[in-house]
Length: 411
Image (cartoon, rainbow, N blue to C red; front, side, top):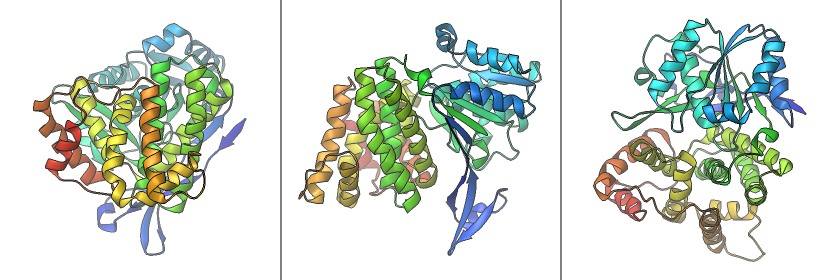
């Protein structure tokens, strides 16, 4: 069993930072915000150790945010029971849906206030964790999610956030962000702030052994996308590279194994660790066009996020290849695809082909059946806005290029 805690740097422009509260330091000439990482419990049974640690902080009233299926499957009850044995009054909100919406966050917030909860614990996948983060932030910031959307707009520290992921993919248990949807305006609302990093997280592969095949594939490809986009980022540093390459290596070895045998507890644990490491890489180096497009597939069609990432990833890699061939070759080597003597260009092609073949083998198609031609200009515009505002992508594209790329995903 492991318990880890440390901090990583996040790059900032000094003018952008003004008014931001946080811990700053200079690394050379660069101003960096030091992000506290969660204390992490890893291994079978880690979720119960986290419960003991939460109770040990003095928390007495807690909102547990999850979904109805996890409650029905019995995954939540041992956690609730352990907390209650340790003297914590637990209120459960189980209304989280895939691609969580603002109204679910508001419903959970109302329950939190009704029961005077002073901390929030997420049990579930990225949807539960993102919802929990928003609830914790809303509890201490008297403004709607819209006004917290963007970078560093969470003025006051949220209530303590704790996470027990039941999927290996989103990395939300370590990330600085949370994303929810506004279905009325068909927009994703990303709230990005270092204050949203959870206090503690449990990486318990045992909780993931019953995850269905489709969910395993989507969340695993989500983690892979985080690692790949972080490695290809123009602001990647050696630390983020280490996290990204480690995550890619683990995913390429263990995702096929859990797809073949979902009860493989060792590989489930390794996937949990890979998702966490990919989240560390993402925190430091950011994402790219894959997420920009996938987020907008989710906003328009409620496409599961990992599924959308898997569809988009090979197409964006093909476009980006001229500007990041050597880095794609590194990813091929980390994936065990090199045989010796290949040129970087050949390894880059081999990596992209492997990603495409892997996701097709998992049952994830080349295109998105819900995608409509008339929606493509709006999706492209929103994706470019997100990417150009937020990400240091290896090769930039304009509106026409982005539309043409998305058009390839029409079925």
